[in-house]
Structures are given as structure tokens and as C-alpha cells.
Amino acid sequence: MNKAQLVEAVAEQLGGRKAAAEAVDAVLDTMVRAVVAGDRVSVTGFGTFEKVERSARFARNPQTGERVKVKKTAVPRFRPGQGFKDLVSGSKKLPKEGPSVKKAPKGSLTPGKSGVAATPAAKRAATKRAAAAGSTATKKTAAKKTATTAAKKAAPAKTAVKKATTAKTAVAKKTSAAATKKATTAAKKTTTAAAAKKATATAKKTAPAKKTATRKTTTARKSTAK
Picture (spheres, helix red, strand yellow):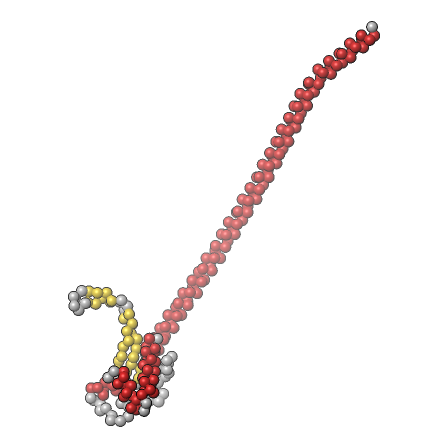
């Protein structure tokens, strides 16, 4: 039986092919989405659909016998319920009318995330996911604390470097000011010495001229007196 034949069979019970097609599509879509999300779809008496994780392993190629590495993967798995097994094996007779799979007792089904029954295995899976999420959150918190502690430890070092830089700058400024002052004083001394030397030379040149003029004046006076 393929999907079209399944829809036709359901249509005989529902009274319309369109409604039957929508019902089949809705059921299949809900089951697929639940299994992909990691939930277990369990229908009492019919079976259980679930997602199974397969770890990486080595297998053999049936044609060549070569050893091949198989990557980690996830596959869907269906396990038939006891009622389904009993009907197929013939230990129970298939009813001529009505549903072949009996309804679950009242209160035995607990709606889960996708409206499916929550089994102990599903609860364990949810617990594992919660534990993994908590572990991840703890690791993130520890990483943040470590980063904060490292930043606090680095802060004094930065302050010390800043102070050292400031001290070096102050010393450099003082040294520069002292050097400038010494250079200015030396320049002033040099200028004063040069001016004094120049004045002395001028005075020496002027002295003979004054003596010569005095002599000429004296001689003129003597000549006038005669």
C-alpha cells in the first residue's frame, strides 16, 4: 500500500478523499517534526517512532570487504507495539470492524512538546538536554569570571605603566628646561665677554688718537705764544 492507497482507505472511513488526504498529511507531518526535534512518538498498541544517534564506527563494504569509516549520524527508528506484534503474529485476531489498535487507558498519555506521549526515555532525554544546557551556561559564566579577573589584574599594570610614562615625561621636561637654561646662560656670558672685548679694543684704539690730539693742541698753543 502506498500513500495514495492509504488515503483512499482512510477516505472510505471519513467519507471524503480531500479530508482523508489532509488527515494523513497532518499525521505524518506531526510525527516527522516530532522525531526530528528529538521527541518520541508513541502510539499505544501500534508502536514508537524515535530518533537514534549512531556514533562514528568502522564498517565493511559488502562488495569489496574493505574497512570503511562511518561518520556519526542520526537515524529514525520504529519499534512496533505489542498489540501490533500480536496481530501480525496471529496470536490475536484482527477485528472485522472498528479500530485494530485499541485506545490507551484514560490518563496514561501525557502530552509533550508536540502533543505526543511523554515516555520515561523522553524524560531522560529531556533531563540530559537540560543538564547539557546547564553545563554550557556554567562554562560561559566561568569564562566571564575569568575574563573579568584577568581584566582586574591587568588594570594595576596599566596604571603602573601610565605612571612610569608620566614620570619619564616629567623628567624629560625638567632635563630639557635645565638644558635650555644652561644654554641661555652660556649665550649671555659669551655675548657679555664679546662686548667687553670689543669695548677694550675700541678703548685701545681711541687712546693713541686722544694722545695725538693732545700733543697737536699743545704744539699749537706754544706756537701762538711765540
